[in-house]
Amino acid sequence: MGFNYTALTRMARFAEWMIDEQILATLSQTLSWSHFVELLPIKDPLARDFYAEMCRIERWDVRTLRQKIGSMLFQRTALSKKPQAVIAAEIDRLRDGHMTPDIVFRDPYLLDLLGLKGAYSERDLESAILREIEGVLLELGSGFAFLARQKRMSVGKDDFHLDLLFFHRHLHRLIAVELKLESFQPAHVGQMELYLRWLDKHERAPGEKAPIGLILCAAADAEQVELLQLDAKSIRVSEYLTELPPLPLLRERLHQAIEHAREQAARQLPGSEEQA
Image (cartoon, rainbow, N blue to C red; front, side, top):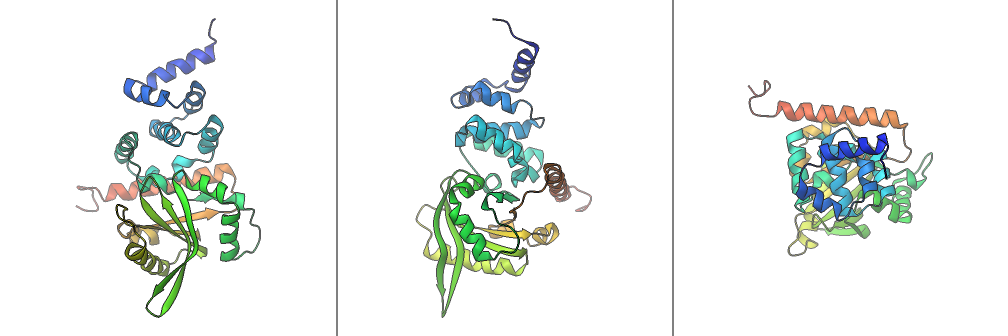
């Protein structure tokens, strides 16, 4: 049977991309040709490799892969905002079975499935997340397991309550999630630090890594987050969107964030003008 021009073009592009026989053999155990057809149009080779490996690890069907690409999953990961050499190294680690927080956490999270309109409270947001927990877990990513809502933490004479507590199977860590209706405030960091220290002392099981905190807020100032150096504190800050903006606007916003993050990373490299 002959092949048309489109089929031959796809085959040629596939041969140009998949030059490592070992990688191809590993991917082919999970991905079908239909998966590869969805991946071929992605222009950024690092993004294409990311989707291929995540598809293999999380065993996405073709429809799910298409949805992940359409929702700009790669551009919403912390990984996409790193220098290209770092991205390539992280993808190599992913091929070896090592998943990192930069791959797991996203910004923004797309929570339009919650159906929240108009004015709502943090408790409404929390209740909607639990009501739609299956869809939320799909957005969070494979490996998240829900543990508790309003986790009680007794510190001295006071009781505190963490909004949501998860465990991530691939990271081997507890994930503490705080929901904020307002924009991110530096004061939120101190609250999360308290929660993480309590979890590390009272809930961390033998063999687990230190807990990570995720502050989900309506908006976040990139400069404030950057100055606080939250990676060293194992805290992530992400926005959530309960109503999706037009795709071109979301794409533009994510590309701007990626360029800003990479410029900042370049300034911090040894020998940069800023450090000279």
